[in-house]
Amino acid sequence: MRRYGILTALLIVAMSPLGAEAQMDVHLSSNKAGGGQIPIVVKDLDIDRDDLRAASKYLISVLRQDLKYTSVFIPLEFSAGTDTLADGGTASAIVEGRLSWDGDKYSLDASLIDFVSREMIFGKRYRFKHTALRTVAHELCDEILFFLIGETGVARTRLLFTRREGKVKSLHVVDYDGHGEKKITSDELVVSPLWVDDHRFVFTSYRRDNPDLYMIDLSKGSRNLISHRKGLNIAGAYNPVSDELVVTLSLKGNSEIYLMGLDGKLGRRLTKNRAIDVSPVWAPNGREIAFVSDRTRVPQLYIMDRYGGNVRRLTTEGNYNTSPDWSPRGDLIAYSSRDGGLYRMKLISPDGLWLETVFDDYFSYEDACWAPDGRHIAAVVRYSAEPWIVIIDIDSGTKRRLARGEAPSWSPLRSR
Image 1 (cartoon, rainbow, N blue to C red):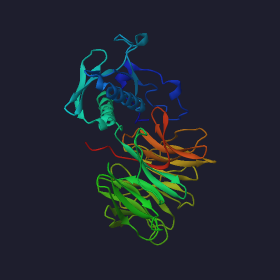
Image 2: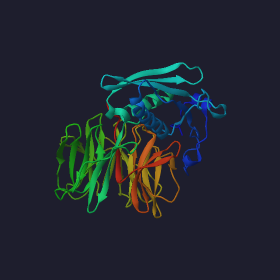
Image 3: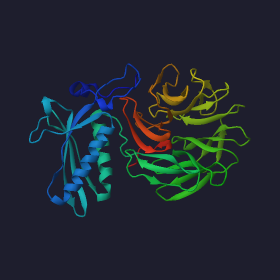
Image 4: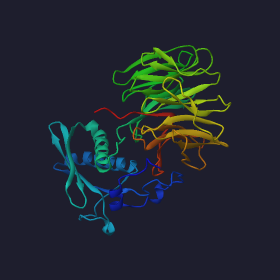
């Protein structure tokens, strides 16, 4: 598969098999590169005052966890009192630094060093308050990922999701690593949250006894009603290129797909079909839209251009295919396909020529949502009938539980 690969030179130097705890029953392309992770040494920070010890340990522990969550790196430590790894092993790089006080703020001088030559790859100074310890660790992890393998990291991203609480579903936000969960709404039924940018999102609420579309701006603490047209008002995806949403409305009873501005102004109607057309998602280039339609009497995936023309059926296998999400890299669409009593997560190329099932186990995988790195996916997996948001690395097959809930939406990268 053309998308897989991590930087051949590093893998040759630092190949290491996945640990038994990380191996999964994953079914991906046989052309997938890797099968291993890159060892990287993360040293404890130097400090010049004892009152910095707790902060330095906390920062490094978060960084090591972040590096592990990339599924690219294996964070290691030197053997006590030495500058060597166990069994004469090697690594790609060394992370080291010094934490000190700069007035009433911390100052971190961090360096990434080549393991073999001991030459500096990059160095950076961070000045921050105590409340930003996790943020700095996340940023440093993203810097390491970029400088070593050229990929964009997601350590500073967040996820929206819903959680059922009695008769309502509340809206929550949480950091990508499960830290800092916050409840956004209460006492209303909320569905289909969707990030617009790193601080604004839209969602559908039944608080007025109709599925209306709202927007919340976390930076302003504001909430605005965008669309309260009769029937469905559900946003499928946001296109930053044209600054518009693609939405599902049922103005005349039948579900159709439209374009809509963030102010709620209605744009072009894209579908005109007696069938139900729902779940639209933009291609990253903003020129095509994938959606679900039952125009063949069962839900299948289709693709159309941004004007509603050139409609073509994408999925030809399975009789119940739903919930598409287009990879930010543009080369894959993830979706759910019903197989007996389970939902399988599948990946398909936009031309329909490549199709693969991600997992073939005893769990259902629903509502797949790509991370902005095009490598990780959030999906809903039910454990003993309890829905959990699970983070999946599609290159390595590793997965981890994030939070109890449904309908995940992964934020774009945070602006600096």
